[in-house]
Amino acid sequence: MYLISNIMRLKNYYLVLGVLVAIVLLFACRKKDSDPQGNDWGPYNPTPYTIDVPEGFPEPVIPEFNKMTVEGVNLGRYLYYDNILSSNGLSCNSCHIRSLSFSKQLFVTLAGETKSIPPHVNLAWNPDFNWTGSEPVLDNLCLGDFEPEFFNTNKDSLFSRLSKSSIYPEKFYKAFGIEDINKLSYAELKQKIVYAISQFMRTMVSSNSKYNKFIHHQAMMTPSEIRGFNIFFTEKGDCFHCHGGDLTTDNSFHNTGLDANPTSFNMGRYNYTGNPNDIGKFSTPTLINIELTAPYMHDGRFQTLEEVIEFYNSGVHNTSPNIDPIMTKPGKEYGLGLTPMEKADLLNFLKTFTDTSFINNPAYFNPL
Image (cartoon, rainbow, N blue to C red):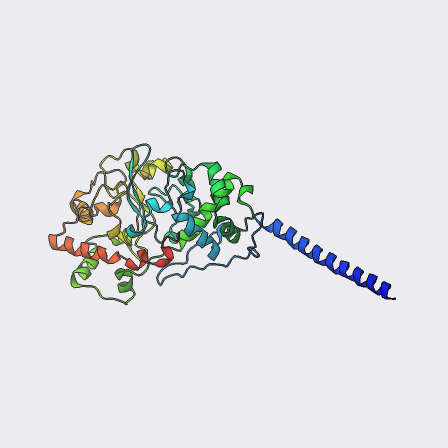
C-alpha cells in the first residue's frame, strides 16, 4: 500500500507539473504572437480622444480612417519633435517652432523659391492645406516631408531606428495595434507616422486670445483696439470679409493684388489647378497669433505688420488678374486711405489675436 501511495503521489506531481508547463508554454506563445520583442504591453485597447471644441467654433470633421485616440496623439507628439524620422537631423518642429505659433520665418525650396511656413494652429477646421490648397487631407499632409527637400529619410535606417527604439515599438502598438514595425511596408509605415502626427496637430487649438475673449464678452479692449476693431469689421478696412469669426479665416482663396503680373510661385492656386481664374489666388491664412508669425504673405515679402497694413492701405495692384472684387470696390480703387492714427489702431487690434496660452500649453511641449 505504501508503494502504491507513493506512485500515486508521483503521478499527481508530474500531472500538476505538466499542467503548469503547458500553461507557461501557452502564455509564452501568446506573448510571442502579440509581441515579437517579448514585452508585455497588454491588450490593444486605444482610448478615444475628443477635441474640446471652443465656443464659436464649428464641429471638426474627423475622418473615419484616422479616428483620434489618446495613444495616437501621444505617438504623434513624440514623432513631431523627434529627428528619428530624418537623415539630416530635422524634425517637424524644425519648421514649426512653438514660440512662433508653430511656424517658421522662411523656407527656401530646392527650386530656389522662398516660402513662408504657415502655423500649425486650428488645423482641425481647415478644409485644405498649403498656400494653394494643394493637399485636401490633413492626414496626408506630412507625407511629403520624407522626401529629400525636407527629411531626406533613409528607408532602411528608419525601420531600424524605430524598431530598436526603447519607446516606439510600444507606442506604435498602443496607437495602432502594430505588433512588429518591420512587418510594414515603407508606404504603410510612413502613413501610420503621418496619421499619428495628424492626430497630434488636430489637438493644437487656439481660442484664448484677447480677441476671442472680447467677442465672447470675457474681456475688454482698449480704446485704440476698439477703433481698430471697427476698422477691421466695417467697410472702412474690409478685413472681415476674409478674416471674420473665431477662426479668422474664410478658408477660401483670394487674389488681393499682391502682384500686377504674377509669375512662378506668385501665380498661386493656378499652379495647382491650372485654372486661369486661380492666377494670383492664395489660401486665406488665419490671423490667430499673426503677431508671432512674421514675415508675411506666401513668400514672406513683408517683414512687419505695419508693412502689411500699408500694402492694403496704398500698395494694392488693382490691375492684377482675377483680383478680388473686395479690393476694388467703389471708393477703394486706390487703397483704404487710412490715417496714421487709424493704421496704428488697426495694428493694435491685430495684436489682440495673440494667444500666449497656446504657445505655452504644456500639452504641446517637446516630450523628449
